Image (cartoon, rainbow, N blue to C red; front, side, top):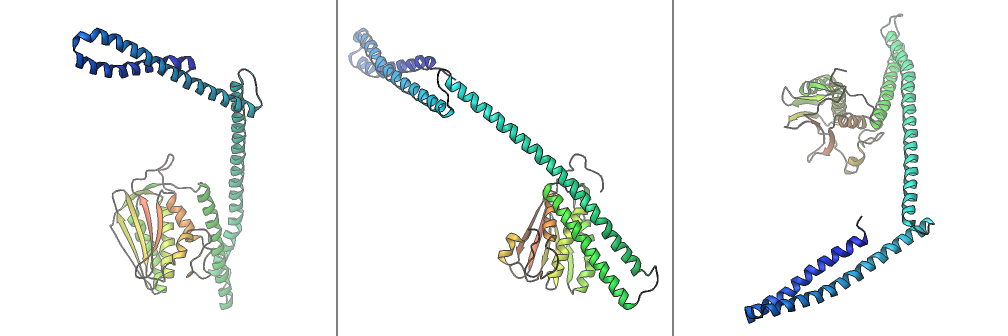
Length: 352
């Protein structure tokens, strides 16, 4: 930081240069008027005028510097008064006190972060244990129900078969709900496992459409897709298949008779658009459509409202975007945009 003793000489030098410059203007004008004979007299006149102007300007500079010094002393006095410090070196002691306070606050911040990280580790461990404890009995329920349905232990009556089918459907639905809740939690905390490989997204889209054709026929919906046969990108094919399946099944359930899936390849992105001609999306629903446990007005009581939230998470872990819009004519369109050049993260690269 520049001291006052350094400021004053520099200010004086600037004032002298300014004074000489000011004085040279009338001198030059007079020299042109009277010629070379009066050059010596003009030089003396210029020197005197410059010296006088330098003194005037220097005095103004001294006054300004003195005022600035006074303001600095007042600031230091105010700072030390606020800190309860007086005497020589008060400003330095105030700065030291602020430095110690900052160090204490930083230490408390680090301690809080450490506690938060420990709490997060315990939460993840608890969720992993809970997931395992829920999976085990649910898998047993579903598994033994399948054995009963296969009549391994003997034939079933018609009423018994209906009961077994009901148990199987309820168990499967509960298992899917548990998986969805835990997957959504992992996406929220950034711990959802993703393994990107070089995959043909076009083949994934074809498989999703083919697997959904049975559901479409039972609902009387025409399902079709269009796009190139090859469209490669670094993705987790299992996660992308799940996301697209959610969108296609959701479109079939709400369609008015037609669902179209379109794959488009651009230089930096791949886009998959799922379009239906159903009732569409109300303007007020667009903002809350991807929130967990939210359901559209046409969904009635079906589902827990996690499908679109999970789909959004599956797309975003790939660095992609998921958007929804109401069609101009009828229905709605959900669009998945994936970065075509996304490379695997460190430690990735194998099939999951």
